[in-house]
Image (cartoon, rainbow, N blue to C red; front, top):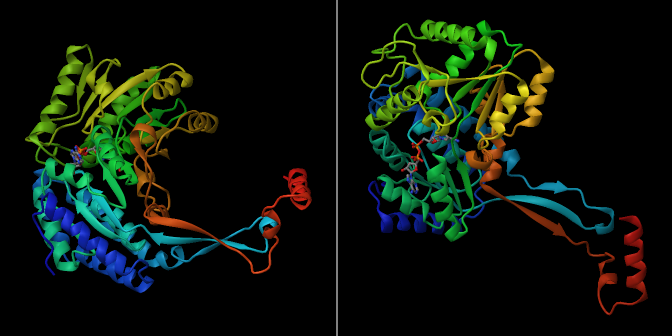
Length: 470
Ligand code: NAD
């Protein structure tokens, strides 16, 4: 089966037409058909693991294999497996309670696929972010078009080839190309569009989709805070926080961006984080378990964030030596809100430490900024934890660790405000790519004729009854 590998605007539109026509011919694929598609998606990954990891690593200029096994292979296979096992139950029409005054009619929700789902993918978890939404979209009975990132050209080429080998283009197709192709892709009249990437580009995608009234799921980024509570055991928490920060060298949408630390504990925090980083990575330069920064441009951007902070008075604590694009982590103390590192999403191994005196201050610091994608809280004091949960709004939360809520596939994953619109993962993914069609079925014998004109005494009596009881 040959899918087009290099598609530009008209060719992309053609694939969309092919998918639309195929969808129109089978608007409610059976569970067996959906499972078989997911089986092929699983095989696409399982049969080609080594080639996939090699391609991603080549694109990064060195990416930790162990991290890829966890976050690309395991998460994708587990998501496909869950969708395959559960879709039979999720696709069943569900009865909904009917209020007394509408009896004896009955009500139900009928899940229906939307049609063709587009998916624009960033470079940082290229397989996961291409295929987890695709798995949910296929499970829900849709067709899928994927546009991977131009920053992962080896992976994008491989994914296009594999998609063509395992799928007919009417089922799932991959479009390669640069930013211009992504822009044209976002302007196609999909039935739903998923975009994972930066908030700035997310805005442009939302505008393009609005033109077609295409509903969007926007999985964006932002500055996710980690609050170290005064009740926190740093020896336990620092390794967990450091793991979350240095996984994929900080190039994770839900990575803790900065840490809010009680002022009196900043020195201890620096010591514990330094020790945790050294224990996990005896060296950074040349360490194959430590991931490189994706491109020269991003590497230069991160170096510039450090220089800018230092020039404005920050204290720079380097946790080791890097080499090439393997950048050693840097703690930044005495930061101010004006520094670029406190204004932009960092997306790299830099951790600004923001001291606070009262919990209220820490909460206010978070609430003065855009709503974050993730929030982390470390400590033992339950009432402080509850106060933070009740007084902040974020896409998701992990308590006493970092990142893991995003891996719990039964929890919806998505941002709020500037960190995103909508959510997926597990059943939430199935629902995101389905229309839950409400159906009210009228009974043969019913009292609704009494509501028809000409209105008179019967209607007034009924209206009076409803007024008294509602
Ligand atoms: P990006 O926004 O630069 O690019 C993402 C994708 O958008 C790429 O495939 C690119 O080709 C495409 N694109 C670029 N310009 C476009 C345009 N004008 N119209 C349509 N598409 C366009 O993001 P990135 O650098 O690839 O990824 C990093 C960002 O992604 C970070 O902000 C990170 O937080 C975020 N992210 C979020 C999640 C999440 O699930 N919420 C996951 C991973 C990454």
